[in-house]
Length: 115
Length: 115
DNA sequence: TTCATATATTAGAATATGTGTATCTAAATA
DNA sequence: TATTTAGATACACATATTCTAATATATGAA
Image 1 (cartoon, rainbow over the protein chains, first blue to last red):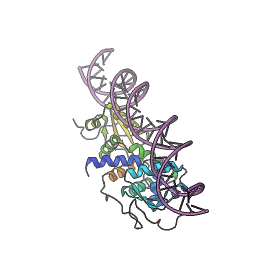
Image 2: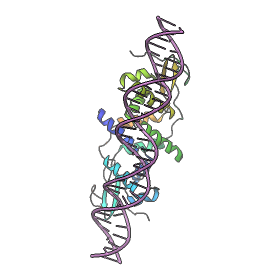
Image 3: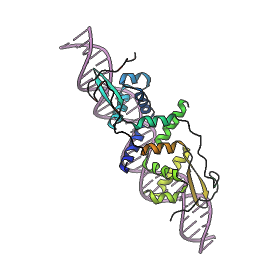
């Protein structure tokens, strides 16, 4: 895992961070879906869905096979289910503040500062 | 966890999906840092770092306390470490395609289609 | 006080992103 | 062959994001 990979994954993160694309990926996580399946539960124009699918495919997150005039999309990237899970996971509302100090008030910088 | 929460988290995801902000959050995951600590290892103008910090704080991801003229930032959101971990985690290059068909080739739609 | 330091804010330009309309192609079917 | 259906693509426009430069503010030190 080098830095380039991390940069690539940040690009992927940015691509995914959109409600329609999250919804699409959520469906594809459950199984193969063709575009008209997706149209049923996304309140978006067909062309718009197609555009999102195209972007996701260019990024290598999904792919499709052809069945007659259907295009059957499926998930290709293993990071996606993990990301979707985090979006649903339960978290504490806030992490505890460092002990040294109250939040957004005065405090003492803990440990050594560099330089 | 309702839909509003998911939408909020997608917003957070979008905010985080930026190299500088990932770097900042990565540092804050290790501990409290003030702005000039961050300036040392981010190759960005001070004002730009300040802008990123401000955005992250408005979203509730981080907060700070004041130590003299330092602002000491720390992590406030528990989803962040999980996200950062995913960015570093090892994944198979590609998920297996559905058995029914070769990728981006002809195949048969698996199971029942709806409608 | 005055100065230096640490950080924030503002404004604007450049660029990227999202979406709609219209059009296009390929496959299935009458 | 002509039509319908499933889906993709092109273009235009609005909006959002990101960065730079300049300026402002607050604190501690001289």
